[in-house]
Each structure stands twice: as structure tokens, then as C-alpha cells.
Length: 241
Ligand code: FPP
Image 1: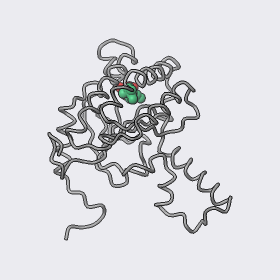
Image 2: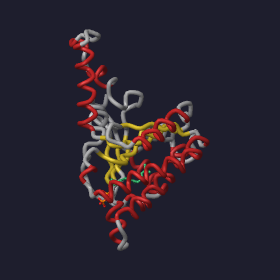
Image 3: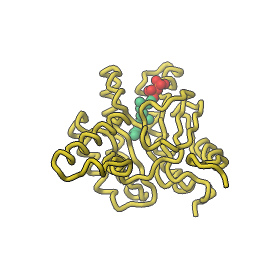
Image 4: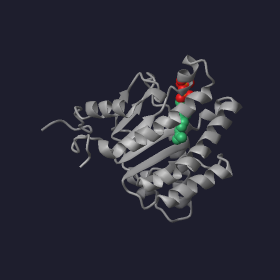
């Protein structure tokens, strides 16, 4: 039983939109990448807090399909940060029982990064303490579009009857097909929007928008948000008996 959590009320799957790195850096008169580096340190702390808080699945939004619109310097800096993070954290993630997965379209990512992603997925595949999913070049619409393309291909090949395409079948073609739907989606930095994150999977998720900028989002605040989630009444469209 997790140390700091009520196992009954802890959300099994928490998804986080880690927003506010740029503003955090700006407040300190530093370049935006300084904020992303501080944000990466927070990722380590939040992942490490999951077992004691009863969070089995953590999904984090690291780079969206729209983030390519940022300056070349910021995009290149983020890609290099992801590479270094995977190189440096691989041993720790593996030995602490974290199973790492990536969602999103890998086609536009550079080969070195994709190799590191593949290696880490393979190396941690048997781990089961916490399942960390990193969304990289991910967009909810892009994910559903890619799933629809593959479904259409299966139908065209005669391997699937179009009448058998239902919600469950479509979900099985999503990047997240092995994950449960998120129970709670947290967004930091005071912005109240979902920005194309887990659109299909979050149909019945609870949302928590916190003002804290991501580099300041501590494990203690994470625990507080989870506690407030525990008080919510989730009905999934039904009414109380
Ligand atoms: C949004 O803040 C943040 C991002 C687009 C990048 C998220 C990346 C990290 C937290 C770095 C580390 C991640 C991993 C997996 C190692 P923003 O830049 O849009 O902030 P702003 O809204 O204040 O400008």
C-alpha cells in the first residue's frame, strides 16, 4: 500500500501538461531553455513521488505536434535536452522500476533520439512499479488521424469489416492502446485549456488547473492536487443510486 496515499482515492493514471517553463525563465531574465532544464529536474521529482502517492501511470506532455512552430533555437534545445535526459536518466529509471513508453509520431524526430527512445522502452519493458509515458511530437488529433488511417488500411486489405469499427476497436489503434484512460489531467501555469492532449482518452477525466509554473511544481503540491481529486464525485455520465 502506498505510503502517502489513500489507495482507494488515488488516481491510477495522472496526465500532466507541464506548462510555464518559458515564463519561469523569463521571470529570472534567462532564456527559455533555462526554464526547460529546470522543468526536466521537476520531471525526475514527480516520477519519483508516484509510487508513494499510489500513482501507477504517469503521462507527461513533453513536446506537441504544434511545438515545431517555436524558434529553431528552442526546438533544437528541447530535442537536445530530451536526448541528454534519456541518456542520463536511463539507469535510474530502469533500476527504480519505471516502465517507460513514448507516444506521438516518431517520423519527424531525429534518429539518435528515436534510438534512445526505443532502447529505453525495451530495457524497461518488464518494469511495473510506475508506467511513465512521455508524449513527444504528440497531438491528440494527429494520434486519432493516424489510427483512422491504419484502420482504413485494415479495411481496405479485407482484414477488418467496417461494421466492426467501434470505440474499442479505434482505441486499440491509438498510441495509448496499452494504457488505461487518465483519471486526472493536471495543467500547470494557470492556463485552462487542453491543447490537443489525450483528446480521446480524457473523455471522463477530471481536470485540475494549478497556477504554479511547472519548474516550481513540487512533489508536495502534486500530493495536494491528488488529495483534492480524492474528494471528487466521478459518475461517468450516470447518476447516484
Ligand atoms: C511548456 O512550457 C513546456 C514545454 C513545451 C516543454 C516541456 C518540457 C519539459 C518540462 C522539459 C523536460 C521534459 C522531459 C521529458 C525531459 P512553455 O515553454 O510553453 O512555457 P510558457 O507557456 O511559460 O512559455
